[in-house]
Image (cartoon, rainbow, N blue to C red; front, side):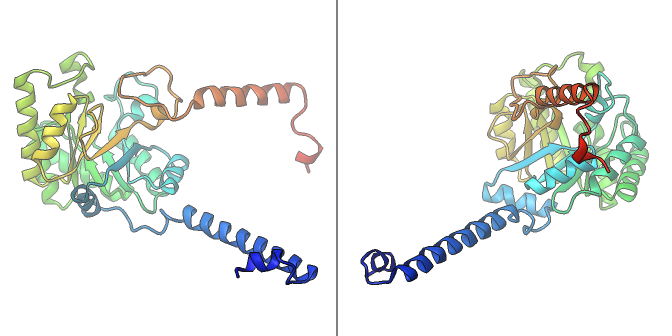
Length: 310
């Protein structure tokens, strides 16, 4: 006979039945606390993400989750949540500084943002964009820029936009032992060349060049490639044709991972709504409501109340 059957059969005294029920309650509470603790610490107990780990993830078919991050507070939350990769993107030029393009942000500013993120991160791999003008057309300057980012911020890797045209810079940076991830498709630093943010590589010639560039970057030693705003079928072909991970943004589901801009996916930025963007929250409205409530409380002398002062 099971214990709960014994307890209900009158075989135990009322006193012992109470002890039994109390014991069950304590055990259940302890079990739930243990489960919650294990869940909360799951990602904290996982090993540090490295370029080697990302390669293993591709081989196992495990998708890679990447988001942008630009400051200590947000990076802390991203790392606690278990994000695999944080990209300190030159999109900081847009969402942090208010510029219309990524072009104005400087190397010093990228190092500032990267340093802030690195002070928060324990597990995630941190990749930093080389900003416009810090590597194009001059491989020596490219290496110097990459070294500054690695030395001054402590970042784990850098990202460059382009294929064959920047291969010399990629090779020089890799020769110094600095991990590099490439970026093909829509390359925002080339906006003045393209003149638009439409889907790239829709014609056969550009698609073939993208495939060739992906091969060149892999052969050079890049540990991965970001594919931005290209047809999903093409992204799948590229992903299957190379042995390094591909991270997509507007590139369909057949890539090895996904990346979004943090402010876009949280719904802070309401002005940018491309087809590929999924908003996981609407912080714009909730933050505006919080600010509005605070303003009203201050005006009405409702804040601080007696319990909120010394």
